[in-house]
Image: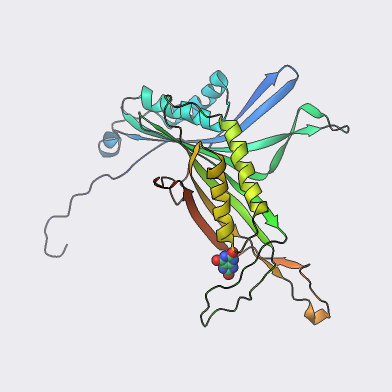
Length: 307
Ligand SMILES: O=c1[nH]c(=O)c2[nH]c(=O)[nH]c2[nH]1
């Protein structure tokens, strides 16, 4: 405390609280045939919460246990038509029913299950297998007025075994990378996209159809782009989504470059004509960008936050 006898006052800054990662599985029984939705739901609420931090009064604090209960009760009462719709319902519920809550953020991860088939290839009524690694995400923010819905997916691993080049790059004294006109391009797609929809005055999107179409557009652009860099492929993927889906305003992609290096077989007198690769897991290049409509403002955070 140089030159001052009194310490500077301390104040409470940004705060939020909620129940993270409530795992809810909703089975819908259509007679013999069942369907299921498997979610991890994280609720974060903020508002008039000075007292609980500063004086210990819990009068404004809806318990996080209640939030967990609400997730299960809503799954029963309303079903889970889509992660987005479920998130909007929860966000509105907490903000509109609790005077002290001014903002709700609902983060959802969705794990997809595929119906198992019998020996003839017909779908079994109530047996499923978890679908690959890919996880669907949704994030809803509601401030009592407008909703902001960001859908997404992560851990969708894709590879092109040709149609990828990387050359003509900047060099300095530490550059050793060889130019290539034919390499493997592999990445794990992590994408988040923001919907134009924000109030009930706008037509409600078909969240499920929209998700499927965005996923397909991303994969088509990845497969169909002759790549001169992962950056170029990233832009092509984002642009394809915005060009084909009017309901999307902005998309942010985070693409690790899952390097595949040609294995050196010369020591064994073997030629390696782009056939044998060493799949390195780290370090990896990390290519990230937002693609948005001209004049629009980017609103998807550059760092994903929990929930
Ligand atoms: O597509 C790529 N972009 C880069 O920026 C880069 N840097 C690198 O070493 N390899 C690659 N590949």
